Image 1 (tube, one colour):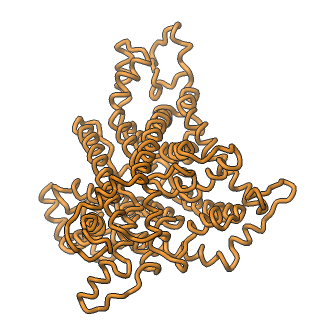
Image 2 (tube, each protein chain N blue to C red):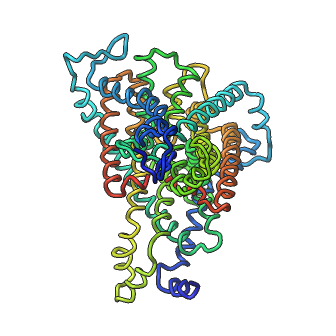
Image 3 (tube, rainbow over the protein chains, first blue to last red):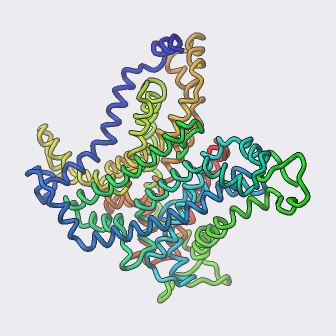
Length: 281
Length: 304
């Protein structure tokens, strides 16, 4: 293997230039985020001239009622949407991987379409449903309904990826050893699928946390979420307070990502093929 | 009745009589598990889409934003959506999305190739570095660029220090919007390309050199065909969200760089022309569905 690798290096695309390219692209990917975070600690109000270190913008955030309210709304939406979408998405993923039936591939296509549907279109179509057909007052409830809808597909994709590497013989073994179908499901299938379900839930949570477009159309007065609040503020212009708020959201997402990473790393260590992030794409 | 291999309840040898009633056929089991999602999607995904199609054939109302009757279907909304006022917005969205997709290939392909083949022990670390922006807020990443590109922003002050002038207008230009889209969707290109390159058979590249092909010929005749599933996936995963994007033109663009997503949103907001907005949505959806079916045809639905 190592001898083969040495030959590869000589002939294929030059690794040296590729490496330089990779360094530059990573710089491109991370520089804006770093700049954003650094300037959230800037004392000056005016933005981009550095006038000294300050955590003043963070304490301003803490005392801002709008921000606190938006934060509470965001969490409430994300938690409800994640729990419900995870349950439905997991059941759907089981159905699509464990059983062969007519319409299965059409169903997969439907889920794919919900993934690629432009957010604006999904948003306005639900707005039309809520305001003109069901006459539901736009509130946190409608936001939660909308979030569940777009989270399901992500859960399905992640859980399906996990179940695809599942060994059917384990269930047969459980049956042979006298387990009822219910016992086999709860004691064999569920524990093995658990890391996938957890990863799907975390992904759903993060996507719900970040959504701005669909929330924009389905929220009413009083149901502003953090991304909506940020969007509103960016219309006024750039301010270090938004930098600080963005930093808080980023740190929160990174913690979730780390948590998800640990779960899938532990699952892959157990040798059952953890959920790789490439399966998302 | 029971399919054995795939069934959760499989006891292929001797199903004992008392347990028999519990052996539902596979399709029934599948549909029972799918039921909550089916109902949910029917009410909140399919019916809303049908409503939008219906609205696109309706009239603009005075009190209610929409008047519709089956008797008089109104096709003028589609004509209006493609009239000289809106057609440039549609073509502009396609142009920007195409430019961003090409930029993503130019940046993402070499990056994916390097990670897949040369990054060595730390491959997973680099992969995570690609995934982190993918999973951090799109809105916040666009805001970061707004912060950098504004007239008294960092880019201008950096250019000023280099003596290149510090009052360039970056925001509200096509450059800013395409940059934002490229930045936003680069991980969507890199990850599927990585997955394809990793699976690529390296000995084919060696064989191509041994048979006398040059670098360029090998690249286009061996490497590109063998990574094409990832490339197709990447192109669609970047192009589709980019063409309907709302956030990037909102934050980085201006009046002259409005894209389709903003225009649709406008019709449901200040514009208050729901039938027109619906017709635009249907056109956008149709355009994207064509992309999806190309994808399913080219890559296969297992890639989902």
